[in-house]
Length: 355
Ligand code: FA5
Image (cartoon, rainbow, N blue to C red):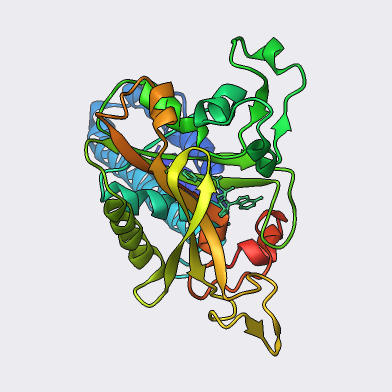
């Protein structure tokens, strides 16, 4: 029995040396130490020994068992360590290496300008609203004191929607792509909340395309209606905006003009940022402004007929309104150096990525 046990141990010791995987080790464990393993089989012969032999072989058999178990545990630990070493090699990552930067988009210049305009006018209590971008003739023209067939409408070079009334129910004339955001004026008054400090910003459309015009552009329309509103307040609002948007050095001027929906009316020009107000670049006429100033928008005191159209009594309420082009305004920001408005919508990433 003693010899058999010693033989078993030596077989186990040489077998375990050949083992190189966890699975093979487990198989060896089952073969020797399992319930029906070689050691168990040998020990089942103990019962046939004499009491004296049992006394001697019993502890020896126990010692062999412990040695096999210890050998198994040692090999197991060895294998685990090898495995961890291999993993460390194959799955190594350098956590200090710089990451891969995700491709980031950025807001279009026009959107950035709109956000800035909104935040400046917010400080004066003007709240952004949205009125339709496709609207009836009534709001775009008629309610603004421009009766049907009036010559003033020609200036707006408007796109009309063929059969527009088939898609928009209503009795307010033809359907147009709004040529200006002034369609929001009577719509805002009709809401019935007074006083009004509206900032309507939207896309607008006209049949025009050259260095200072695009067929689709944006306007921001301010409307203030209250009691006892003055032109001085309108000028104050412009000064506030211009200083914040363009900086303190830039010059603006109000020029008398004529709009059917304001009386008196003005246009607002800014000293051209491209030629520095000199009207010349390298001895040639500035192709952006041609005269040192660029028109940014129109303004004036709301015409009594417009107040009437919205259901207000002009003897009680008055106000001012203004509508500026967003693209022109952003182009005139210092340092912009954009000499053709159409570049904004050419989808040229080399240009757009700069902002
Ligand atoms: C108007 O559209 C008036 N509704 C403005 C107004 C509002 C006057 C409220 C009084 C009271 P005007 O047609 O001048 O006015 O256009 C205003 C501004 O929109 C222009 O000064 C210019 O900055 C911009 N704009 C007009 N047409 C285009 C265009 N095709 N492309 C880019 N910007 C344009």
